[in-house]
Image 1 (cartoon, helix red, strand yellow):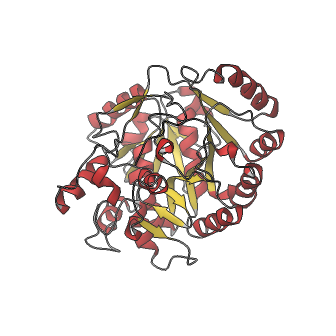
Image 2: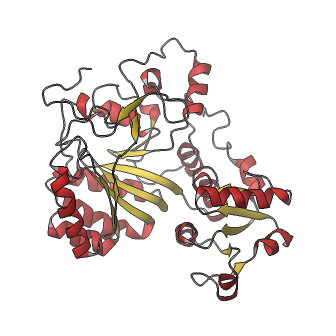
Length: 396
């Protein structure tokens, strides 16, 4: 989105939200996740659920009302649907039957976090909230995936970031962001950084109170050290293990070792097997959008709607893939494609919130000119984890 009324872009949306009472529709695992986010921000809410026992006993110390009571309550409502997709469709049907509208009276949970909560947090609470951010400590990787969305196969200058530089970037970020919902510690392969344990300890000890969920993505080739596991258990890091054993033979042996180690230390984890799945292919060397007009590029970026922001060298990037492209030599740095946090506390915070929501000076980033875009507009696919032989890295 392009700034037109810089500093005032979100005011109309705020007027539509003002005075609303929060309800989480779904007193289960998804609702519990959403409750942690609202509680971290200090937002009061009640649960809604059709389960009679939960209505009688409450859930997580909160009141649970019935769907009937919800629709009968006269106040303005901000309802968050928090359940599996099929269940949310049924919830939606119930609410629409009583005249409520999606994206006015109720929202799906992840859409709410992306498009509503940053606005409410700022205007109602004076807090800056981000749905997620990626934090990359290294571009070094021991795999060479054909479809890597970090563009590892293009990157001829892989490196580990300096720890003191990483600490400064974290300080600059958390000085300006009160709550981030999902903080993702990534690479490259993050455990190839020789000081990964120090970095994780620093994140946990200094900023855990500002983070709802902490995640580490790893490629199932390295068994984490004992100290790493101790730190992750202490601060509640969750491992996201990408199992590429269909193409990476050694992962078949290493995965059980990783799981045993994490279970020993009580570290939460999930395994993504990649079966019958695919990566989107951003096709940076084949895509040519240079003939698009400014208006067409803005519309292209709006349709792409990539939700991911990347934190790197005290700058917040409007598109994480654009930042990956810069590091891989596919794109040059364009200052307007990121927000500079290096000067300490941001003076014009509402402009920063607008940037988080997707507003930029041009309405797109330079990388859009040779990127096939995110899921809504991208038809291209690559097998998950398929390897290129070493020495067959792609040429920029």
